[in-house]
Length: 326
Image (cartoon, rainbow, N blue to C red):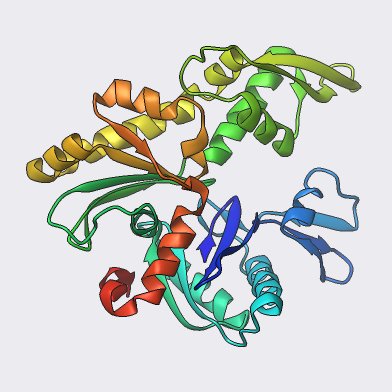
């Protein structure tokens, strides 16, 4: 399982990724029971009445609301059980590098209460590297940059171990918030999180595009308090996202500074690998390549790399158990 801030994915042997849904739960305040989880619950964000609240129980890649996370994992496992017939699944869960003991315990307890057994943890960049097909078993340096919803994970891996890793709590969510702030500041219009994410996906870029893009965005006028629609361009979105993109770039540069020379030389020769939803931002690979002066590769399926890598590792426990977190 890739238990992500933005999305949760579940991979099952022989079936591949069987679940990919937003990490969102909608609850009834009176009864305390879940109304919706995943895709359906995401539609509730910003659209609830006083008797209902919708939230994302993970923040910056770790559990912020234990009870909501337990409910979410249980619902997702139940959904998968119906398709597979598994009673008590054995699970390997991807977590950010540098996760604390308290956060590890919270993840394990959530999975246990949701009905899982034999629960293992793996760092997300390690799982992403396995899923992307990097030769982590070889005596050579591989650099993985996994840009998720809540965190950006940068790791240099060699011989099944991490030579350097850093988890920066700036990623896709911060890009969404930057777009919201930019539109509020420039146009005096408030837009919701879902709208900001749609702008990012539709016309967001980190590098100038050959063909300019634009889209209409609807929100609420701050001054008049009435609905208003504006047109925003890819150049404006690029400007809005420049700060989080710069933080990601600096984290990659820092990784090179702190990586042993031989491993850094391997990465310079082979290039680095991008995974996670952030890898799909237009031109991010070109920007990194220009700034770092090296080849930047994007995983074949960046969104699924962590889940697929965790699935491969769990299918081959004997070979990969050394990369599991104790």
